[in-house]
Image (cartoon, rainbow, N blue to C red; front, top):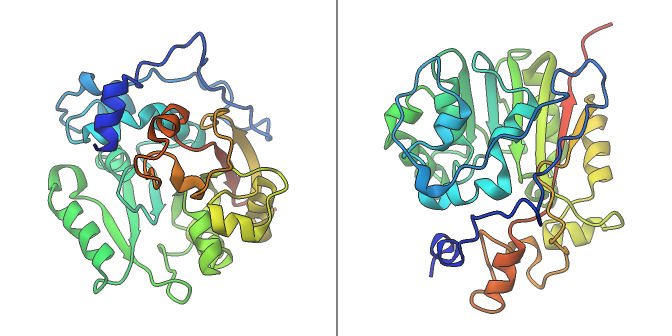
Length: 298
């Protein structure tokens, strides 16, 4: 049984707002931050899908309901809160945006049509000879209506990490990648590359599995859960300044102590059928959502 089938069977997309109130946005640490006071966007259910024509008036909510998104991806909206997350990071349709290591293109299929008319989406990919790189390129090429204007920056970390021309990008985004970079030993190089590409005043938006406060580096590498304080310190070491935190992607059901680490939970469900219903009931991991700025010159 697939993740989507299990979700539908359990009707787990029907969220009870009484027992699980909508996640709150935390005020920016910088009083000038324009994202203070953003209200939560409504949950989009799988059966509300509709085909959309994307243009300069396309909204995030229209994109979330579009039929170009698979049922499995739409079912994850209740965990990942894409509209609220992107609004918190300050996404606007006229921006140049870099998405780092988009993997299965979950966010790419939201960002691409939103930026197509007035902005530019740049996604990073591995060298052409690798199977994951080829699979990603094929996915982009298969749907030119959605992905036709997306640019691809070929990277080969840690040595080749040019994301875009220096000081040309408004927003760099990373979703649940940092634990992989830390394990590979080049997280600092990624932050430096993002800093170099961003304009002064540009934003780095981070979503990452949040571990317990006292989690060690070795335990983070093993489980995929990261120390929030550690992530903040590493990013700020590259020159960024933390300007906002949000609890948009919090999940108090996540106890962070599973045999297979974060991959025990959906969507991976690494334990197979063992305790499957329990892990489906927990949902996806508790994620930190952090907003950093590249300071302007004094």
